[in-house]
Length: 184
Image (cartoon, rainbow, N blue to C red; front, side, top):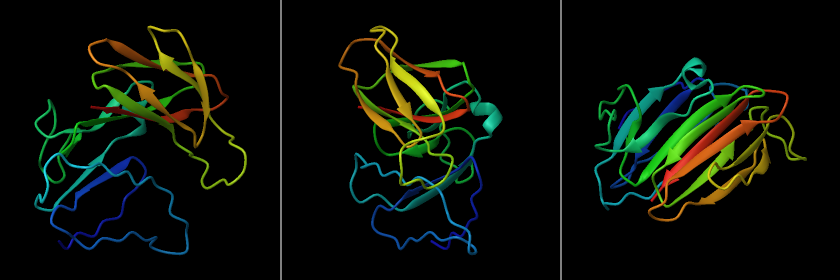
């Protein structure tokens, strides 16, 4: 497809491989690359390849969940390559990102039947014991909480028909970067 791009902090690249493409990532020099690669199975097979980029500043994610990926056709989703708002995905996935300051709490209503939460490891590769940011996560309705540290994740069972508000409370000493996957 001829796409070459340098991504910086807060950038999101969404590629739909569809009928097959050749793809690679590399560092432009000796520096180590640190990013997350997330795969989602589309609801339709053999789609034409697509490529989207989005940029989300730390300021707009500060203490608020911001949708960065959402199903095509959802409110605020643009199909323009370098559009604004969430990148369009061909599956029942809404991905939210946030930066939660020390002592702060953020909430997001979940619409799907399951989910996943991941605390991004902002300190780079660490094969040892988790360190850095620490959050308590759980459903507002139940009051139950689970502590997660950088690099940790947890699956969420939401269930059908019930309203679930997901809560992230930063209980650590530094800003926590968190992804929340709302899935059907």
